[in-house]
Image (cartoon, rainbow, N blue to C red; front, side, top):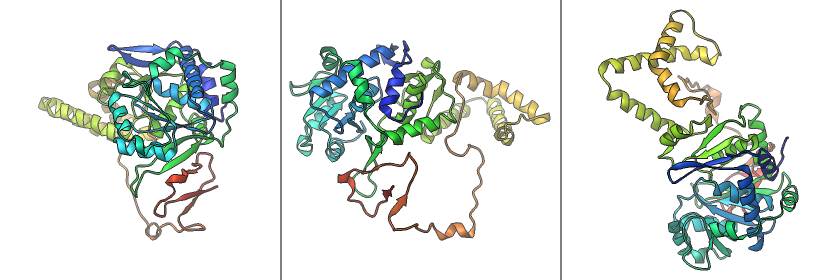
Length: 396
């Protein structure tokens, strides 16, 4: 079934009826959350949001690390036609309050008492906020709602009514905000529609093989659009999503979960490479020499791999030996994972510049504007974020 909105995507996701839709660490073990449980949580949170006065188009903030609470709040918000605004959990209280105030959020979910205390100290900077909900821990006062109690005490919204509400959203409806790092001032709120993200999901699956029996490890922050969009792909395909305990625990969780797929960024791979080099440096000289030889063989074989060919002759024999002595052990630890770079394939890359490349890019039409006609282009910047130093504005 093809989808055009993220709320439609959720309806497809709950149709997979998996006993282990999500996995998360509880008391030292990965525990499953079934599709039925996720659906129930979303319906209860949707009912709670309605009781708090959240209406279509309203902003709901979420300041939390990865976990089952994240898609629960996300899909409940989107299903009501409201807008989810992720707030990086690493932001300082004043930075977080700026984002919350800028987007106009009236209800904010916060994970952890320390973050909650920080936001309470910035209450004057967030005049629109009517309710703070603590995801973990005990609320310090009756003014703060408990996430656990909301799920326990709120009767779920009727599934049929929720589906009817979810199907009212259109591709042009606002789904979320993504805030920039603010290199030229305060962070800018980029407005993304249901169609922006849903089209990414659909088009990505034209080149990605994701299967319902697979397990994915999710560890990049869901506050960023990359991991969030990829998790939508997992939900759409019915794959199991295992949430890592933290970025520091990824290596351990990898061995525990044995994932088929995950996404990462160069910095993580750089750390892995540094660890490998550290281990090699501490090995006996013969092992160091064998490792260096194997890497050299792999580099020679790379052009064949890029052309989907198998090296023959002496290089083929050497590659087989290198695989047995070195790479086979690495593959055994990685098990199911297959590598697919998002950008140009890794290897020895040569860049060349001609005279024309040194002349710069000439503007088309007005200065300080970009032309974008793809469904994945952002809708606009938030009205309060438009005070920028000549930044680009989208023209549809």
